[in-house]
Image 1 (cartoon, rainbow, N blue to C red):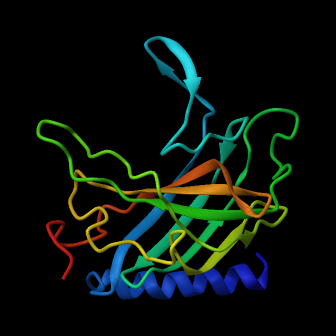
Image 2: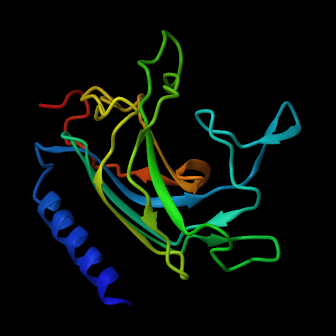
Image 3: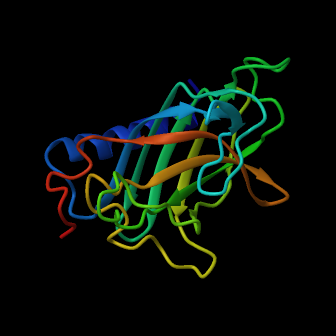
Length: 197
């Protein structure tokens, strides 16, 4: 493991240890694992692109071996991912073309009566681009902001039926591109899922 990754993992471990003693009042979300993209899903029995919040998937399956992210109420984000590699095509097992990643957080509207979840807002809160090394590892530091510079609102995912989506995306022409992995929200993201004090 490279020194920079060791330092990043130690930093996340320190935050995680502090979280183990109870949720931080400054924490908005914690993601503790990830899933790679499958480019297609089924809709009425026919394959369609696995688009999420208006973001197209990568053109082949992707893998991610581990992912941890802490998102704070002031918009700061600390994240570390490993093993973002192609899971298909001739580039299998490599990072292929992507050299940078961006995290995009999509908040969710309150569920309508009778609905399981609320609709995703299509305006993301993005991180700055982070380097993706040849082994598919990356570290993100900084803040999540929308196009106006605003950070995620405190009611972004403020109950169990209103979970946000965190996509790990390529960088295309300096802007966020296709998604090739997603973070999975930790079950213990908040002791009281009904509010954010």
